Length: 260
Image (cartoon, rainbow, N blue to C red; front, side, top):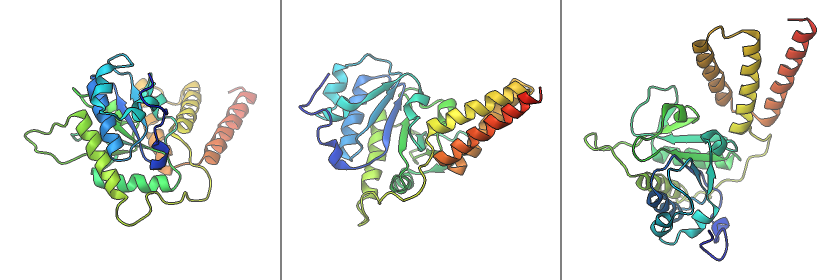
C-alpha cells in the first residue's frame, strides 16, 4: 500500500533519529496516531512487532492524518530480537519500576543521550509496549536503558501514541539548543549491533551448555543474562566481537583435540 508519490516522502531530509519500535500493538488507529506524532517531531523510522491486526490497515491510515511516508516505510517483524538486531542502544519505555539493574532516565535525558549516541555512529531505538499491558519483562531485558516519565500516581496511564509523542517532542527539543542536530560521527571502529552481540552470546552459551558449565536451567538463565549485560556494558566493537568468536573457536578446537 503506497500512500504518497514517493515511498519516503522527503524523510531523508530530516536527518538521523531514533527508530521507533511498537511491540505487539493492538489497534491500527494507535499506530496511525503514533506515525503522525513521529513525523511532527522528526522521527522517521517505524517498526512493528507482531501487531494484533492485519496490514494494510484503513484505521491506521486515517489516524495518521497524512503521515503516509512513515507508514510507507514501516516494517513488520516476527520477533523483537529481529526488530532491534541492527541497533546499538535500545531505550524501553515503562510506567512502573521493574526492579532491573538498568539505567532509568526521563524522556528528556534519554533524548540527549540518544543524540549523543547517534553522533557516535550508534543506531538507537525507542521501544513501546502494547496498549493494555505495556512491555513484558522479557522485552525490557533486551533494552539498555529504561525511560520512565513521572505522571499522576492516581492515573499513570498514557495512550500509546501519546507516549510516542512525548518522546518525540523531547527528541525534537534536544536539537534546538544551538548545537548541531546530530554531531559528526566519531572516527574509530564500528560498534557492535545488538544482532552481533546476540549471535556471540548464543554461541558462547551454546558452548558452555555443551561443557555442562551451567549445571541447571535456573543457573543457565541467570548467568546467560549476566553475560549479556557484561557484553552490553562494554559497548563492544565489531572487531572485539570477531576476536571473541575466534577465541571461542580456538578453545572449542583445543578441547576437542584433547578429547574433553
